[in-house]
Amino acid sequence: MLPPLLRRHLARLRRTTCETMGWARYSWPALHGLDRKLDRHLDIDGGWFVEAGANDGVAQSNTYHFEKLRGWRGLLIEPVPALAAECRKNRRGPVVEAALVAAAEPGATVELHFAGLMSTLAGALGDAAATTRHVQAGLAVQGLARTYVLRVPARTLTDILAETRPPRAIDLLSLDVEGGEPAALRGLDLDRYAPRFICVESRDRPAIEAELGSRYRLVEILADLGPRQDLLYALR
Image 1 (cartoon, rainbow, N blue to C red):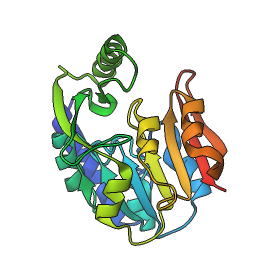
Image 2 (cartoon, rainbow, N blue to C red):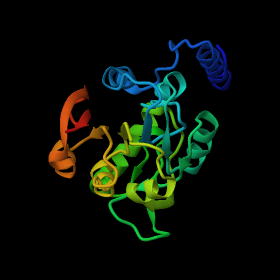
Image 3 (cartoon, helix red, strand yellow):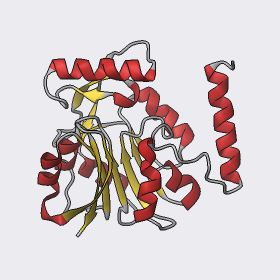
Image 4 (tube, helix red, strand yellow):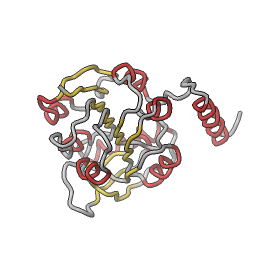
């Protein structure tokens, strides 16, 4: 059996080689086939996206396929420095190292509990016990050796967009921040930036829809795992 590092290297080489030839077979990394499902609703080339919770830019990414095979551009947001560094290697667009919050003063930070793809902000899932359960589950399912706590910049999505200045309207906002989605949406000024579609991981659908208000309609439940759903909303 090949060592894990070599297997990852060969998988990356196969994927990038196929992409160079225009073959998409190995370029659908999203969990539960979300990228394929999104492709049905956003069947356009050259769109613009924002993906928050970008991780390394490949693993379980909802926007990777659109960038690599359909000519999209966009903004990636990832608070863990090591993952943000990998994201910069794997993707073309700007990567902002920040955790999304409802409101923040310049220079503010927030506590983040590392668990790879399941890293979460303190309080995002409820109390400390809920955070611990989530982090331990994340370590187990991903085979990670340990967790740690770090302070990361806290910013609103509005502030980040004002700074990065999207060159066009946002076609897709992909929001997967392990319980912090309602707060992240509270930090988005929909009068200034209203994405055509919002794909959001939800543990509390009423809280999500309270933030979106009457501006958006539910298009599809992309994945339903009981306590967690992946929801797609469209601008009315």
